[in-house]
Length: 202
Image (cartoon, rainbow, N blue to C red; front, side):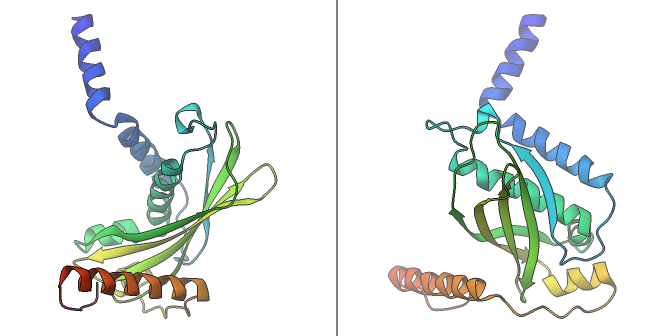
C-alpha cells in the first residue's frame, strides 16, 4: 500500500505541476485573511526569495520564474483589492493578453526580494499593470514588467464600479505604457497582414 501511494505521488508530480497549484492555494488563503485594500490603484507588495528550484544554469533566478511570480503577485493583488471576487460575481474572466519584462540585474540564490504590483490604468477591454522586482538587499529594481490583463464577458469599468460602488476615472496612461500599446497594435496589424486577415482591434 505504501509503495502504491509513493508511486501515485511520483506519477502525479511527474505529470502535473503540483507545486504551482499548492502555491496558488497558499496565495489565495494568505490574501483572504489579510486586510482588504480599498484603493484599487494602491501599490501592493509580496515578499519572495530565490530558492533552489528557481535557479538556472548560471545560478540566477531563471527567466520563466519571474513571469510565474508575477502571476501569483497579480492574483494576490486582485484578491486584496476586490477585483478578483468582483469579476467572479459578474461572471467575468481575466486573462493575460500581453506582457513585457525588462531584466536589469539578476536575482541570486537566497536573495530576498519583493514584487510591487499596481494597476496603472484600464480601457474598455483590459486592465494594465506594472510589476517591479525590488531586491531587499539594496532596493535595486531588478526587473520591471508591464501586463495587459484582458477582461472577458465584462468590462473593467463594470468591475471597478462593482467594487467601488461608483464610477472611477482612469488616470492618464504613462508614456512608457502608451509606447508599449503602440507596439502591440503595430505587431497585431503586421501579423494580420501576414496572415491575410482583415484589420480589426484585438
